[in-house]
Structures are given as C-alpha cells and as structure tokens.
Image 1 (cartoon, one colour):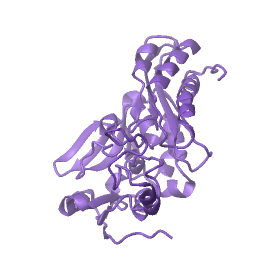
Image 2 (tube, rainbow, N blue to C red):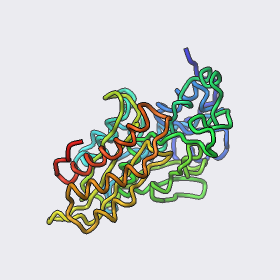
Image 3 (cartoon, rainbow, N blue to C red):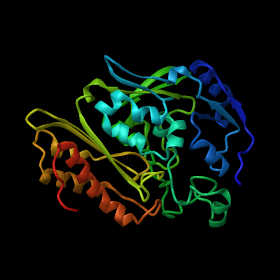
Image 4 (spheres, helix red, strand yellow):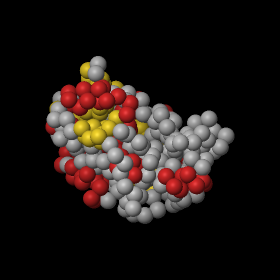
Length: 333
C-alpha cells in the first residue's frame, strides 16, 4: 500500500488568507483543491511538498454565473457541477462533455475545473511508482536528467493531459489569477508552455481564481472528442476541440481548433482559421483542416496506444469534430 508522506496542512478561510499563506511558506508549498491528482502523486513520490494549502473552503472560487462580460466559472467548482450546469450544457456542450469525460463520477465529484486546467503533464515513464521509476532509471521530469521517451531531447516531452483545457482555449477563455501583486487576467492559452516540466506560466505564488468565457463566444458552435482506450476513467491520448462562429448563411466567420495530448501544451491548429474563415464549410475544407491538424501532431511513445495510430487519429477526430459542429456527415475513415 502506498502511503502519503508527512506534510503540514493549511486550511485558509479566504482567498486573501490563502495567498498570504502561500507567500509565507514559499517554494515548499503546493495548492490543493480536490486533491485527485496531488495526493496520488505525493504517494508515488512525484510531488514532494512539505506544506499543502487547501483551497477547498474558499467561497471566492465558487459559482457559475452569467454577466455582461460572459460566463464566469469559479476555479473551485467541481467537474460534476461544470458538466451538469444548465448554462454550460446549453451554450458550451463541448465543455460539458469534456468535464464529464474526466475520470470517474467519484473523482469528478472531488476534482475541480481549476485543477483540471492546470493538471500535471503525463508520461508512461513518469506516471509510475517511485520503485518502478527507480528500477528503470529516473527521468528528467523527476529525479533524473534524461528524457526516457527521447534521450537526445533537451527538454521533457511529457504531454498535456487536461480534457477541459483545449475546449476553454478554443473558446478564448480568460484566466483570472490572484497573487501578492493583486489580480491578473490573461488569455488561458498564455498560461501554457510546451515543456513537460515547466508547463505552466502561472507564477508559484498565484492562485487561479476563475475562468471567464467571453460573451462573444456564446454564439459559437462547439464540440469536443476524446480518444482513449477505455470508455471511462482514462486520460486523453488525443483530444480535439473546435469552436466555430457560423452565420445564418452557413458561412464561417471565425474558427478555432485545438488539440491536446500531442504536445506538452494544448496545440492550436493555426491553419484552421485561415482555411475556414469567410467560407462555407464543406467536407473538402474539413479534410484540408484535418490534414493540417495531423501535420502539427507529433505523438511520441509517452502515452497509451501506438504513436503512429494517435497521429492518424488526429486527422480522423478533427474531421469528425468539425463535421459535428458544421452539421455535416463526415467522409468514411
């Protein structure tokens, strides 16, 4: 049986108290909300904080509400609450589906949207017990100095593993962070780095307070598809999110397609916008965008199933998700 190591536990009653505790404790601290990723990784020796600061009781991180600026989602809302919320189900079915596809019902009841947005990157050689990693030789992500996926790589190639992140990026979501310098807002896409270790641009002393889906995204058609071996529980080994602004004539005014689990950060298919914008969506256009998605997808031997198959599925799933959003029947694959 794997056991948690010793640690000090802080349970602040306000966001201000949490920020102060994080500043006081320093680099030896980690934030924890639902704990569905933090606690297992502490048991396996991947996370080694000496102090945990709980965000569980913070009311400032709760709530899903519509305002003149858009739809606010508190970072502390559970994945279950996000997946079942009336406004999200109505306007952002991609987000509801992505949140519902995370893990199991029990873990979705505990896990938060903020935790999923900032969840650690994954790799076959990293997501193992301490004893397994010790036996094969530690990797650079924890305790070692080489990437076991690609020994010649200068950086860690662990992959982004969030289901909700690609959907939120496709919708142009803004992240609201609280730190010692006050509140900071930025595009969620700017919080990700394509580096398996240093994958988040959030400062250590900042707390994700909430996510704002901008008002202009309310009319966008959106969808998310996830590839995994089992129909439940598994992390994505490929995810494709699409958000399209289509007018009454069927012409695309704007389009965003984002992949996950093909790099260390959500990967936007830049060509999707230029190929689709200002045009009526056809199966031929969808095929061109799907080719562009497959071109930028570079899966490695760091997740389940063969990497050549995952690359091929990047094309297939992009075709399917765009056809779904556009209301077309995808070509046979």
